[in-house]
Structure formats: structure tokens, C-alpha cells
Image (cartoon, rainbow, N blue to C red):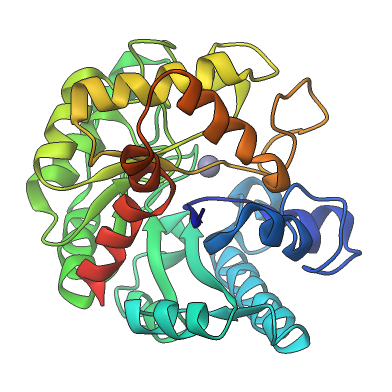
Length: 321
Ligand SMILES: [Zn+2]
């Protein structure tokens, strides 16, 4: 089974937290060994940066450099393990890597605030290989507002610079990611985006009332314009508590199919973005087969499983290639 995982924070773990191990072998939930076991076709690697870490020394300017360090890191890892993994910038790259038995690494940015009011940075990021940008993390930035328990924040949308960037992303072939955005930003993105829009790692608010998740209306409208959502394995977004069970993962995927149709759900694990030592039914990427089997037991046909595992995400990558 080919797997496309639209979100992991493994680069952050390796570079910022653990600082040891390689992409091949490490204590993270994602590594080459595990991806081989899972049959990974594409792993999206988020270059995640938290401006709070740089509050006193450089703010978003430092975050921009931090993201570039992450890009350099994954490029170096690809050179260290050339038989196993290579960066992919288009559909053709993915096909070539697959034919040569390699996993494709797709690079993303998780914190659009690094643009820091400089539109030319979007081109620079594209040239460096970024193909998806999560507009905001959990802070207000130059583009707009994040998800929040505070309703007044949740209603706020894109700023003028955010609108300009969202339009430009579609023109240049960069996927717009609504995960982490406020509801207001979500609806503004649907209004202004010219290319593909996804929720790379978000679940269903009808099943788990967390502001990081999508309402049914959001799912319907996102699906209508061809978008997709990747199932997030974090317990707080699955069932509002730590730990995550196969039962709730399958429930969210089935709900996505009910509301958004079979072309809507995908996988966006968020591996290494939360503590996977919590009681998880799927601790790392090597155990993905458990979810496949659980869905099969629920009667989901293989053709639909293939859509969730890879086909829906591949459709989006084809759109930007
Ligand atoms: Zn995230």
C-alpha cells in the first residue's frame, strides 16, 4: 500500500529537540526504516518554527533562517541516503523516485509569518523547494489569525497581505494549507485561493469540538472545490484527550467520507508534533497497517482505502505540477 502523509514535525524533532540520529534511524515516529515498512510513497516534512522561541532575538527574521536550516537539513539527509529518499518538487519527481524505489520528501512551511511582510520571500521559498504552506501556526501573524477558543479571534480573517499571498500561491503552484487557521481565515482562503487548498492535518469538529478541527460546513465547501483533509493522529483533535485510539481515527475518516465524499479524506499524521509516548494505538509510521486493517474491518473497500492512503493527496500534487 502506498502511503502519502501530508504532515509530520520530524525535522523539528531532529534539529531542535533531539539533535541526534539521522532520518534513517532515530527515536522519532518517522524515519526511513519505518516509512519503508509502511510503504511510504511521499512524506511531507514540515519546516515548523515557533516565533515565541525567538521573541527576544530576531522574531520572524530568525524564524525565516530557522526554516532555511531545516530545508538544508533534509536536503543533506537525502544526500546521505540517496537510495532511500529524495526531495520531490512535482508529480514527475514523485513518479521518478517511485520507479527508482525511493521515498519522496515534499517540503512544507508551517508558519507563514516568516514572510514577514516581504512578498518576494514566497518566490524564494518556492525556489528552495517548498510546495505547501500552512499560513499560520497558533499565533497571529502578517497573514491573518490562528484557530482559537476566543470567538472574536476565530472570526477574524486574512489581512490584506494574507489575501495577496494566498492569490499568489495559487498562481505559482504552492498548496494553501488551512490547518491551524481561524474560521475567518478558512473562509477567506476559500474565497481568494486560485489553486489547491487542503487541511493537511485536521479532523472533524462534529466528532471532537476543538477549534483546530473542521466543521461539517467547512468539510463540504472544501470538498466542493476539490480540497482534502489529512487525518491528524493527535488525541486532543481526535477525542479531546491524550492518547489516540483506532476507533476514533476510523470514526473521523468515515465522517469525512459521509460529509465530504470519498475524494476528501487523506492522512496527515502530525507525527513528532506531539508526544507519541502517550498511549497511542499507532505509535509510529511503521504501524500504519493497523489503521488500514481497522478501516477494512469497518467495511471500507480497498478502492476507498487507496484514496485515503495516496490517491486523494496525489490528485492535489498533480494540480501544482
Ligand atoms: Zn501543526
